[in-house]
Length: 582
Image (cartoon, rainbow, N blue to C red; front, side, top):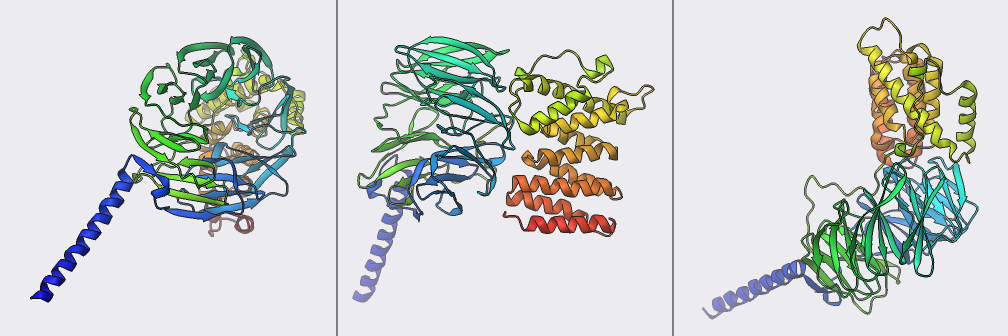
């Protein structure tokens, strides 16, 4: 009997201990206030060097540079996905553009365009010391600046223009207004000069503003600008003219946080007040309690809210203004930077060559979870020249043969500057008219042919110029026309253009070429062009998903219904793709 009582008591003590452990664990994951020195580390990953600069998010991946001369990509639970070493010292500045393309800069003045797997697309020496990170433009172009210069490059690494901007304050990042004009600041004793420059290199306006600008961030509606006296304003543009839509008072030298979840909002932190606002109106959605965070080393927006971190503490606020969690950092840890993840980790980048993850909150991902877009593509059509004359109206080409040759050469050699403003406007007009006319010709019989039906050589030239413009401005036009056009001669031009452009967001051109290959299985010239363009797109984009999609396009053409020549070229093209890093 005594032994039985002893066993029962022992079993009860065991159950109680397990229950206490579960309660403690649950408390750790649900507690709002956490001391990191007392919290068990969830994971740690050794690195080849100390993280320099703030890691950037690329979908579900984080990208960071380290002082060992390389770049690493890792998941939010510390798994290293890939590493890349550079042959020269790098600056601690990274940015992410369309389709997850990554931009890095060297201390010697080089830009590196990397695919999402870390492989290099191209690199170019800009001829001056680069300050800050590369700013991706909305149509595939990029901007980079030095102490007194700013330059623009296309998505193939060809310089479009370079301008001297002496006196610019490079401590404030480049920011883009809603139509696409860049905003640059020059600080004076108690005022700031805001200068505008178009995507085509035109210096357009200069505005004198009272006070010293401390921060500026691009939002959908324009540019949020903060001042040392606590003002925050929204700068917008209409038809290229600058306007200031609203103003709020937010406390001294406010920090603006816009990146992450919930577009259309911004968090503003200052020493006296902090708040979440609507960027379109300046309306305060909620206010945050006093943060007591000093020496900012990290900030961002996650699924649970906006976080801000200093040298000794970090805090996260929900959209309603409530504190989701707060963390006291371990003073024994030497932290270079940190960030919070969507699933509840706080990730520390330490000076001891490690990244460490701490589970602050358990936040499971829903099945339909989609990570926030780090970049949204578009065009600068609002700033193109306003051209009323079109080939459809005049019944003759608006880009002469000599102009075609000149524009083609300029797109290849670069440094054409503001001339692009007229060229892109004409190409946009002609591509739209061509699409409409060719689509109408398919749907009904015409007694009189449209202009782009009768002038096919001119149509081919327009398609070629659109594809070599060094931008993705005509990507949607090409994708739509690939889907709608059934004439094999026209499809040959469009397929070749897809390979020239190479940048294929969301696989749309590859997808359309796959359907064309199935439908036109006896058109060998067209099918061979599909092989070439598939290779060009997959080589440029480079990721495993693109290469897999390219193999699917090519594998279609291996079946017996295709000619021996087509099967042979498709097979050799697939073998070349299989040798590509994915």
